[in-house]
Length: 92
Image (cartoon, rainbow, N blue to C red):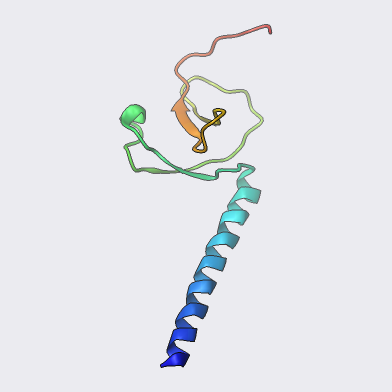
């Protein structure tokens, strides 16, 4: 019985370790600190529904209207995901 418990703990540890390795691999491949996000509201419909999972990647290309962007807001842990509807040029 004790051997079964140890085996279950070992398997659980392997699953957690594998998940962390995959997560870190996605961070390296995508160049994003949050390579996977979940749509939390209906503001992205009809393209994305609440609960959809988005895989993100960083790009050095200029942002264009219609693209999906992710940004952080001071004081919030969860990144904000939105579609660009209008670009406003600024000379700041």
